[in-house]
Image (cartoon, rainbow, N blue to C red; front, side, top):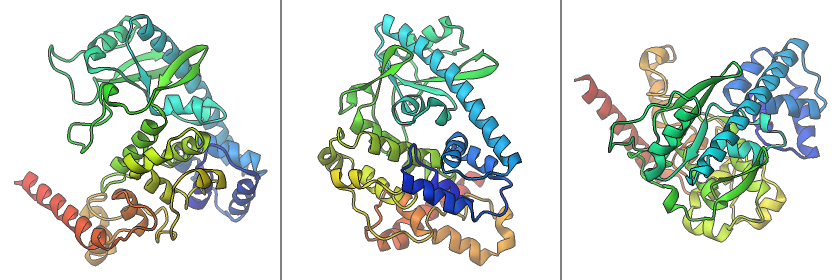
Length: 366
């Protein structure tokens, strides 16, 4: 079923892609658990639409589950985007420059239907000097929106503001930086390098990150989460590939190559999950190398799973999975494309990274 999810991790598919989806689906014998897996990956509504478009006959119980998830996300996103429009309008009236981040912007810019891109919350970037005022305005809109102590702000975003609307919990995070303080890079609204990108939000003009900043932020987000603790989600693959495909002719690819090589490297790897179009490959300097071994295989060792949970497979296998993860994961985690030399990361960077984790683990237990 993983191959089917991979084949549907794209905002839009071509006719040849649908034939491939149908071919993979027709080989599946046991469909049980597919809706749950798809929902965990953020792909449930997208999977439902792609399977229908491909003409796949879905077992009735699975079809009902996927359809229910599709309708649930359609409703939830309608409510969220209406709320977002109210927030954006309120911020504009208060002269607060605000950029909508990640899923909410991408759902309208990249996906054929906003409900195809599930969201957990709404993320909005403002200037650091405006963060407290923005949070206070959310309280005026009926949110429970805690304010930090005077002259003190968390390093990335304020505490999540929430309210109940139409039976759903609406959550909003006011960011003043795109990254935590301990992350090796930092970017606030005044440090952006490309013009904000406008988009229509229920009749209101809202703004998000510009082309190059958007791709860099999305790829940094994946690199941050492709770690020894947690897996990435396939919806992030669909976001990045979908945005690059949608705006291939507007993106400044020479600047991406010069300033944000991580973007090209990430797209190079994602090509083997969701093949990039000939148009994108012509317009960009993305290098496609060999398919990485262990395609899509996540980190399997410690500390992703505790030693107790892995004991059944034996300590030899635990050590191997920890120090010799799949080529796919290693390249994604360390920001390498599908063709760069890997040996120094395999034999030096990654083992030292794990040893650092072990040292931290033992110090915390003292």
